[in-house]
Length: 187
Image 1 (tube, rainbow, N blue to C red):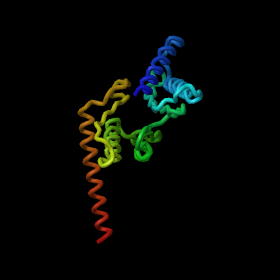
Image 2: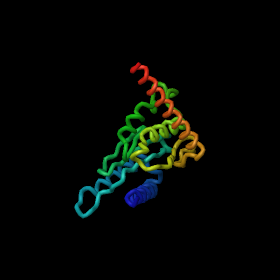
Image 3: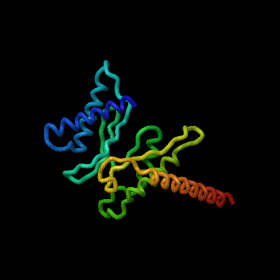
Image 4: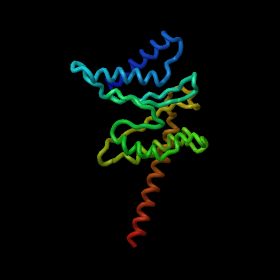
C-alpha cells in the first residue's frame, strides 16, 4: 500500500506540474509515460528498492474526448489497454476479458455497456475465486464513464450487489450445464 500511495502522490505532482507549466490538464498517455519513467528509475539503482505495485491509470481527456486505460508495471513498462488485470489470477482474468466485445470500431453498438461490463467483471472475479484456497473478499469497483460524468467514482453499491447476484447465478447455471453435458456424454 505504501508503494501505491507513493506512485499516486507522484501522479498528482506530475498532473499539477504539467498544468502549471502548460496551462492544460495532462493527457493520459503523458501521465502514464511519466509514471513509467519514475517507476523504472527505481529499478536502475542498487540503493533504491523497486516498487512492488502495478498501477492502473484510467482517465478521460477533455480535449480529445477520449477515455483510456494504461497499466504501469513495477518494471516501468507502460501499455494502453481496453481492459486489463493485475495481481494474482491476472492471466485467466485477461483471457476472460478478451472474450468480451469492448472495442468494436466497425459496429460500436456491439460493444457492451458499462453496466454490462460491471456484471461481466463480477462474474470473472467470482468464477476465478477458489473458496478452498483464497480468502473471502468484498468486491469493490470504480468506473470512469459517461454515467459518472467522466470522473473517477466508485460504482454504486446497489449496482455492485445486483451484478454480484447475477454473476453468482450465471456461474451456477453454467456449472449445472457442464454437469448435464458430462452426464449425457457418460450415458
